[in-house]
Length: 313
Image (cartoon, rainbow, N blue to C red; front, side):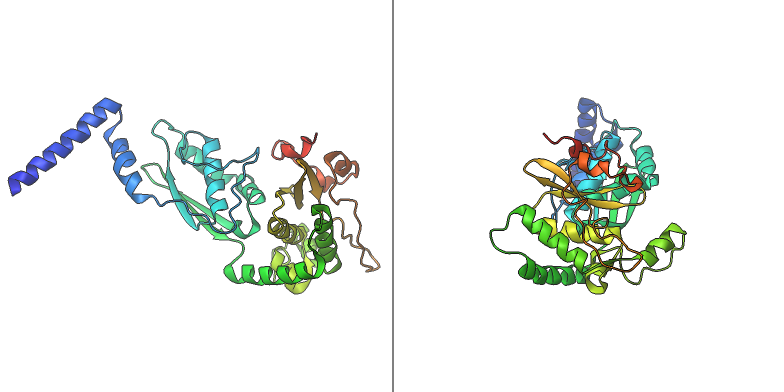
């Protein structure tokens, strides 16, 4: 019996050795690729809010081959978009800078935060944790911005609003306008929290005005609250969209008839010193030229990240 076991071990060893020679791989990488990698990694699963959309800035990956910094970014985007809380992939054997590039991306908070602009708000993250090991395994752990209670509450509220403001046969433009008007007419900008942020005062946001939950429950919002609420509705209506952000502002981008338009609820809900509530349409489905004619420093966005906005025919 022991002899038979030894023979099996010898045959297995020889098989691995021959394979290593044939494929010109070092033994550690061979074991990773053919044993550890295949057995350990989970299969990517998608939740109900995965959009699976490709954009110029990031694209969905289908094989998790990791040979460049762009592949890393696409892998992270694909994982966040999927709605999974944790997922791992491996660096390619010839990608010697992989771990260094991962560390560089981890330190670029803006690069990671931008990923949230392209996924459904329900799959967006509050924090993203990236860990590596000596074998080139990269593990992405996602702490989501919206929990299950938030999602259930928003969906219930959104359904109630839909039955109130949307009618069967409405055009996309009319549906967007109805939601735009409802959200603005029932929300005030959170000036107090905005001033705290401008003055580097980081107290707890008890109103949740940075999220759609704060907009619906407390009728108060920062620009991120307006934008998330609108994005959730746009996804509900099956209208392609993403979010555009600068250092101090964020708004929606919407695709209609193969053209992209800006939609900024925050700026269409101006704050007046006399307290009068206003609803304007200066930033409602404006093309890029119209949008940038109104000079606001907060709208000076990076066109290399959102080139779709300038590609209207």
